Length: 229
Image (cartoon, rainbow, N blue to C red):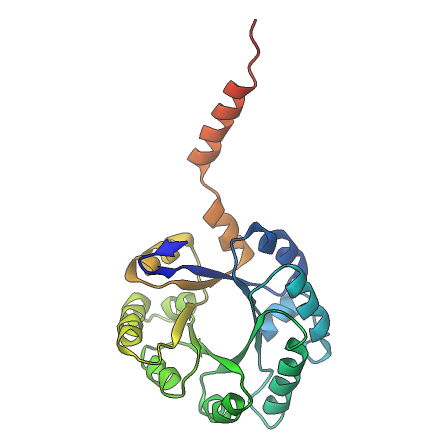
């Protein structure tokens, strides 16, 4: 999807492989984003996930990017990220590691950059956090838009400020909007200039469903199948 001089990129926010198999072949999604909560919802136990198997399926579905979140920001984080990077080298997609926007998470980034990892700073709730993500040269930042609104924050104002910061940055840490609750939110944010969204299968279904379009197509189908009497 074209927007000015850029393309809108959508990511499927799910760890449910049936959802991957349903939605990724549509061509709507550029990549897949995952996290421990999504894994739990899919019935997976994070420490025992067969990451190579998941990556193989992602590649088979022609995913361009695959995002995996650190299980923690303790001493095991670097080895976890390094192992996932090594596994991802066997596949033809860009691997991105998701790092929480905490003090502990930020301190992990220099070593991860030295390992050649692409970084997404996650769990963003405030526009000021864009400055942090950009300063450490993260590739992406993921603001939790829906959760920001639910926490009583002026989420649209924060997103507008983040977009202004992105426009003036030479690093241009990309804003990947997460925690979208409705297509209406996406439309408003896209009108602000936001181009990267990660959405649930339910939001994807809402995006592609328009009752009047369905009605019009039904009328076309009816007209096309009429027989002369």
